[in-house]
Image (cartoon, rainbow over all chains, first blue to last red):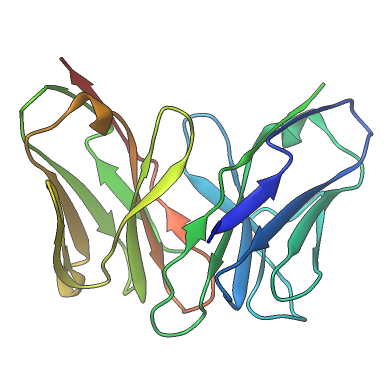
Length: 113
Length: 109
């Protein structure tokens, strides 16, 4: 099992450009999440999808959109990138039941110039 | 929202030493996890421990849910233990993890 995979690993954008970060999991998990990590800080939730067909805002959703394409895949889109979105982005998944341990992907390091 | 406080913020050890990291949280939780973020940025699951005690090799963790804290013990530390240790809690199943700011651990040879 690959677990949680993310593409790309690194990306540099110019202000105003758009891009989509891809995430997939092969653990048959119901819930998927997108977090961002800024230097010296813990992770903060951007959006999550408790189950296929649903999405909800997290702590810092402004400037982002998400799509739960199917049970395996959850994408994060930046429509018009801003320097404040320079960060490391992590995708995670969990079973969504009483034992809701979350598992994280390797991260995408994004720089917006 | 729930507050998660970790201590100490920084810790420097000599190889072979033992250490205890603490996580305090301000509300009842459904889930508590400990992670190790290695120098390459990868987040590694250490423990899923909403209550009780677990051990995995040189690492062990205890969560006292009624008193709203968790402890991570590292024994006989090795240089590969270096990195940032995060505690994260979840109030409701399927919602977000709230992370503490982490403990930066450096183990010197």
